[in-house]
Length: 217
Image (cartoon, rainbow, N blue to C red; front, side, top):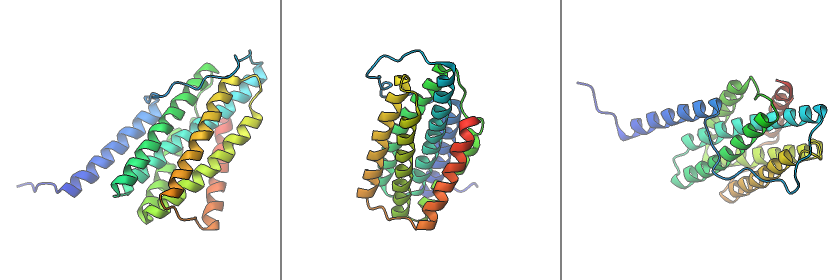
């Protein structure tokens, strides 16, 4: 006789099934935005070939960031057993889904492709998020705070580098920056601990490798 699965084992299996489904949907581009794409304040001008390449490279990096965000939040959601925290991670992941769809749409408009290493970025981010979550909820939240702080700085630098005429990309990045700041603030309020300096340095180094590679590939 095959023993019945316990509620705990069913929950773990269901979590892994949901995680696999999210990975496939994220990497296949099946996610759709709930919120409309942010509209530029001014009508975009025609981009030169050089400007289009610059915008495409930066939006590809931003798309990679959203691939990683899906992986991180869903790994942390799976790791925690706190119902309120699970819902918080789920809500943040839904907003990051909007970012993912917006950047993907903008890449298509720029006739550009996503990073060819997206499966690698997703797997790495998922593993890091799962480890952080297994250490404890406050550490997991601290990881969110540091990640979102780095992402916010990164998006601010993109606003400086995007062509002024590319108001469509700029509107997307500006809304993403607002959302990321909110996610970090919410994690801080939920009880995040500050990560050790070496961990924060390592996160910055890993992000540098990812963004540099995604800029071209």
